[in-house]
Amino acid sequence: GIQVEQSPPDLILQEGANSTLRCNFSDSVNNLQWFHQNPWGQLINLFYIPSGTKQNGRLSATTVATERYSLLYISSSQTTDSGVYFCAALNYGGATNKLIFGTGTLLAVQP
Amino acid sequence: ETGVTQSPTHLIKTRGQQVTLRCSSQSGHNTVSWYQQALGQGPQFIFQYYREEENGRGNFPPRFSGLQFPNYSSELNVNALELDDSALYLCASSLGTNSGANVLTFGAGSRLTVL
Image (cartoon, rainbow over all chains, first blue to last red; front, top):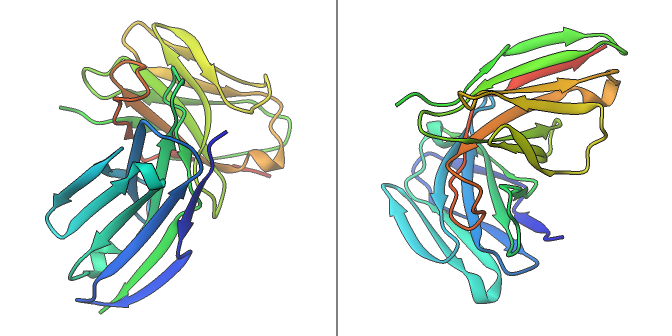
């Protein structure tokens, strides 16, 4: 099945800094989502982005489906951005919502 | 619009016991998926329910079972608990099962500790 890898595994930033998180996937996808998991475990959907570019405030994401990667950009980071960021993907042929998650990037934003 | 709610938020069981976790899907969503997230890992798909039937399953043994009710809420049941079942159990709801079009909405999870 499809494999999803994320980098870097850990990231420490000073408040105000920018960062780029990467997600590589091993097969074609028809569904790719970025999530933020807060310290209480809640997974918040950031982007549904199987291809193209989207922006939402300080966050933006780009997926290049033909090259099998996606990037999440965080600009002007804030302490509330801390947590784990997951990329999750589905490939063609599935009739279920069986998202395959990467192992995540743990982000710590220091004041 | 209400989100996905899960209960209980935390619970402790001992090996061999059985547990039931509950999930209410987001208003308007008819499909529920369950995921297991071990410490330090990404969530792993357990199974999915649509129209009150299981229509997809991950690599989990039969002692993991579920139900979906007419109001689209769902239960996850785990029998004969093992220490490795300690994890955060996440429920996600969506509209339909078209894997290419669904944005999943997750609940806050139920954290299970097996002693």
